[in-house]
Image (cartoon, rainbow, N blue to C red; front, side, top):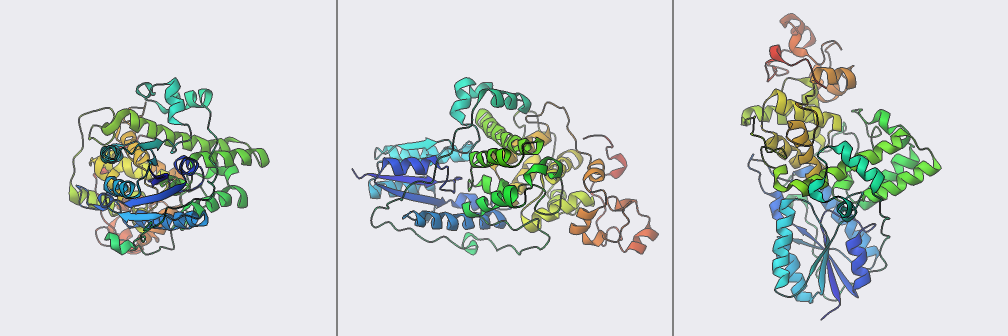
Amino acid sequence: MSNTIIVWFRNDLRIRDNEALYRAVQDAQTVIPVYCIDPRQFAKTPFGFTKTGPFRAQFLLQCLHDLRYSLQDLGADLVVKTGKPEEIIFALAKYHKAKAVYCHQEATDEEYRVEDALINHLDTIDVPLEMFWGSTLYHYDDLTALLPIENLPDVFTQFRQFAETRLQVRPTYPVPPPITLPPNVQTGSIPALQELGLTPPTPDARAVMPFTGGETAALLRLKYYLWEKDLLKSYEETRNRLIGGDYSSKLSAWLALGCISPRTIYEEVQRYEQERVKNKSTYWLIFELLWRDYFRFVAVKYGNHLFKPGGLKQLPPNTTYQPALFERWAKGQTGIPFIDANMRELNATGFMSNRGRQNAASFLVKDMKQNWQAGAAWFEHLLIDYDVCSNYGNWNYIAGIGNDPRQDRYFNVLSQTAKYDAKGEFVKLWCPELRKLPSGRIHEPYLLQPPEQRYVGVVLGVQYPHPCIDITHWRATGK
């Protein structure tokens, strides 16, 4: 038998703190790093749009190029193949007579099914699939050694208190030593976006910042945010702002594809606290990583209920799906400026602030009474930082079928805009047809009388749509 291990890259596109890669280099003379572009991830959803859209796909391809360069610096390369991973990895293992396949473990059903299919194939040639846990701040094994996953609290605060008092963050793994490829490995080319059936997105000058995929860009962003601009010290105060790249870390895009690990961020925050300042803001960034951990552990606990209409609580569905009405939300044509501004930002850039996501999701489900699954699928299609556990966990939360101790949570758009976009700067940025509206009407153009509409050049139904909901019964209470 040869002394070769295949490392199957998934959502762990980095060489630092990558246990699967590090262990493989320790355990074998030659290592074959592989990434499979799975066509199933680019298929159409039941709602008529592709599962992966152009922004996320472009970011992924950039990540693969960066990972290839990093592996080449270590003396290796990245094998890139298009097809089903369970078939590609099996064929490579058989051809190269690999002694094992190493990878990082995922947390949801689609990934489980691919893992099971690969295991079944590999069993026929007596090659084990060894999986490692590397996607969270706290290790799954450390959590479940003290708390079986079925006993995971259904309230985040209880989980956070348990984790902070009972668990320790494991240290990161270093960059592995030089890697040797076996002879005659065909690495393949990384496809262009057009080869995936997608049109490259047009850059928009209004975007909060340019997102470039890869571990190199992730580490540069971390350095910029913490050390060059010293922004972490005020994160808690600025994180809900809507315009510009400096109001929050923006690390979620790189976390989603594993270009940087939560533990790497944690160690850097610890160093920042030692050398600069330790305050509520530095803690708050770790707090956000804990939320990310929680949604991943919840996904393991509840399995496919995360994706079903009744969610984690298995409640009867109480919404409908009307394609024409849903499209108004998706395209930013609801007639409610704050919602439209956020949805237009998403469509134009692949990014939306956390504050915007909460309001847009609440509006779709609670005000428009539309299917939350369609909204979750639209976010999956467009968000650069799409993470299956966080996305669907948050949609369950907003829809009232997930991990939320508060019954009937509701984000009132008017009170939210008064707090986070009082002067309408964000709305005017993304809804330029409303720029002439006075600040007292920027968020409620439907209150303008016809003479006022003509004066400011915004005639409802012409320059800007009428509201898609009955505003006479619009709720005035909520968060």
